[in-house]
Length: 166
Image (cartoon, rainbow, N blue to C red; front, side):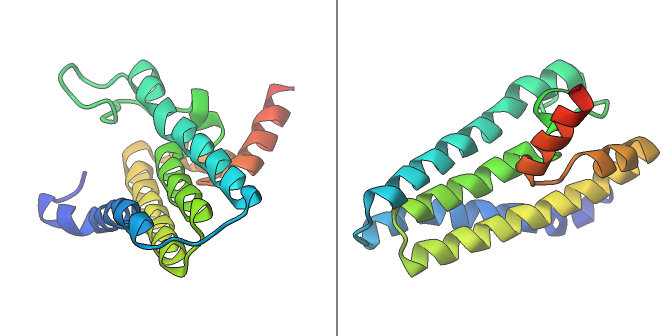
């Protein structure tokens, strides 16, 4: 990472995103919007998809990224381009944004939609910050990876992955 004095500013988007996402849980109890089965089913589907994107890096980063012993799973020593990282560059941030969207779909109240949008935007801003950091750390190798794998668009990522695999 860069200068430690910059760390609070660098992680501000991540902290804001997490706070907004966490606020959605008590907000869900404060608002009660009747919604039909389609909204609930969509919300549950998006929540499940979000959980998949959140959980896969816990397996893929330590396996492929080779963090130093005693370091957290995300402190990789090499660029990880295997597993879920062949589809999207920031699966956990995408997953958390999808969790926020899923909660908003379960209870489509303006407060929930606002919190979900704010959280998703902040997770996206943090992904941009991490792209810049990874560019500095891994150089041209990351530039090529970023050109091939989308930041958040997993549908485009799946299409690109399928075309590379065939």
